[in-house]
Image (tube, rainbow, N blue to C red; front, side, top):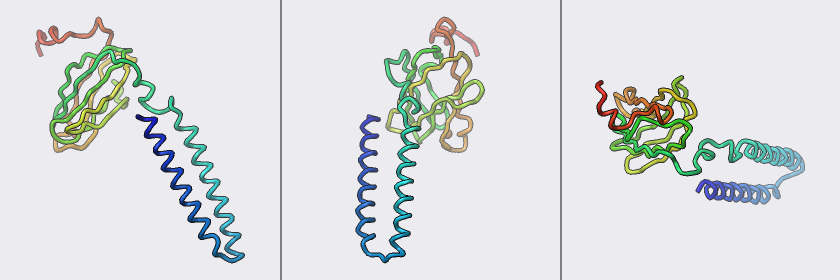
Length: 186
Ligand SMILES: [Cu+2]
């Protein structure tokens, strides 16, 4: 899907440049000597910009350098169902195994929210939009144990700042099962 989107974008950009060149060529036929010199400098500048843009895109848009794409392959070890509503999160589990591919299937019961995963140090690690009537899939592999946080990233009303949820990441033996969680008193 990403490859098709990239190919369509490349074709559209190519067509835009082609049309611009054709229009530029027909316009350049009606000009005098002084203008011709200036237009020449301008067209050289144009080609320089095109080369610079292509060069920068080539360096920065490597598949491995894009976020998530390298993390998305393979079968996830755990699928967590996430439901957002104003103003709380509902997760099928908050016990996450470390070093395993985890998929978060997120949806909203009301308005658009933002699903952001934050490290114990408060650094954002991954995020996706949470839209009503649509399930977004976010895949992530947690490499360090600890208490992570889910925070809403879309201003969704007066209590938006309270949309926080704790995720516990650890080795499988350290994780609580649903049964042991139910027995625990708060
Ligand atoms: Cu919010």
